[in-house]
Image (cartoon, rainbow, N blue to C red; front, side):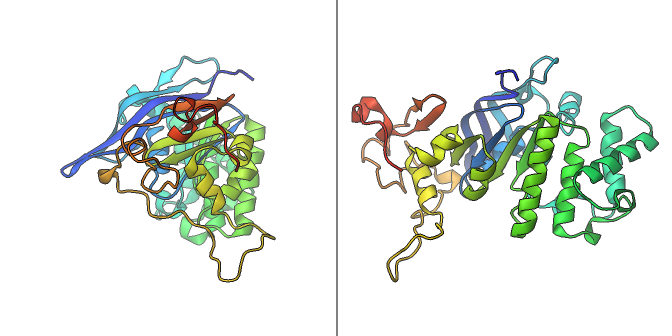
Length: 345
């Protein structure tokens, strides 16, 4: 496998120009996704995870748009394409969207048409991206439903989304995403509304299909338990910025950014004892409104380590603390705190 990233994001900016002001929904993100690997993007609700995912396919709702940076997509044997430079409604991005890069959305009932059968929607997508006859497209749709474990797939082509359970609808969404065998799959919290057993089945299904097709996966979630199970690399997002990223082992066993530490500390632990009356740990406060973005480090208003006059005034540098492990925090910067870079989880 080539070391060259399948998707390379550099200084990505997504903004919404409103009468009240400009919202920086994605604010200078750097990330890489590789073939056969899973990159998990984590953070609280409102941190910008879904907006980052939508920008990768140029499907940011108006008045939002990609205003800067690069989204370099390189499929083996093909020239590199900068998705950030493509017209969101143009033919070049439509050739990539759905075929080379596919996306599974959080709520399938909002993504599937309620007045068209599963087969109509699957076959339409296949015909859009492949020059084959309708009979061949139907066979391919049946094969896609069979791959995701839907029983009697040919009969299910005639079913409508409201006739299926939540887990079955999500499997249909995965079948639609994988029908064209994309190089990269973006999954935006695909298991949030599902029960635990169905969630485990969906995660196993995505992992099996990833091994079979060799595709890269960008998995967006707020569930760190899921991250620990499936991730190769992790990016922690806060207020549109990646505050820490690195291999999953580094993030879980050697977290450096105070926000990452706070997220990990808030996970309930089986077998852990706590004092009577003691509540589960939680991160104080809320993610700030994008129109009221704090100056300096975006996390400084909720950070126990924040230093007045520094964290609330100056943007932290993005530092490589270990090979492939980056964090943006003044309290981990040797130029500020000397050589004491690491902390204990």
